[in-house]
Image 1: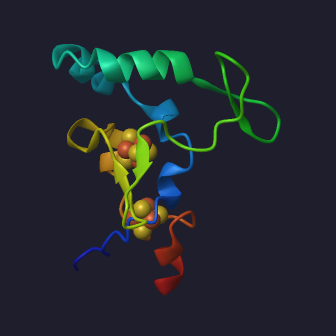
Image 2: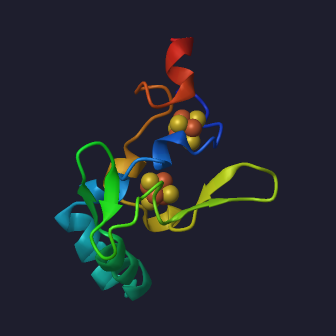
Image 3: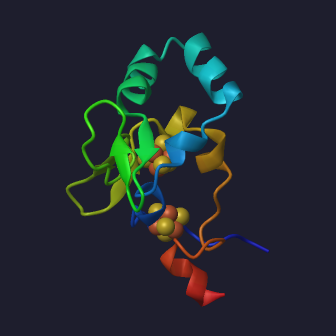
Amino acid sequence: MPGKECKRCGACCFVDMIAYATEEDFKRWHTEGRDDILHIIENESSVWAGDHLVSSRNGHSIQRCPFLIMNDDGLYSCTIYDTRPAVCRNFEPGVSRMCPQYEDQ
Ligand code: SF4
Ligand code: SF4
């Protein structure tokens, strides 16, 4: 059965998926020389502050994944799509309530 098409609404990237990056993801980023990714993760790692996520660096509230951008057409894109973490690669549209397509099932 074909999967649902991602509408690029960005909702699933408004949670801190990066917090679930695995050792394999980090190894790949090291191998690929993606110091840019590692630097951002290091500086933007999040901690749970009771009812919301905050940056461990400055305590500011984290609203979304640091690699998420909105395009001119209003749709969202991942700036590290080709090497995004496994948790993101494995996420299928509609499998979770965080995706608006969940209700379509
Ligand atoms: S790494 Fe990319 S796909 Fe994963 S949450 Fe961030 S923007 Fe979304
Ligand atoms: S919440 Fe669903 S439709 Fe929106 S970007 Fe994520 S997978 Fe795509």
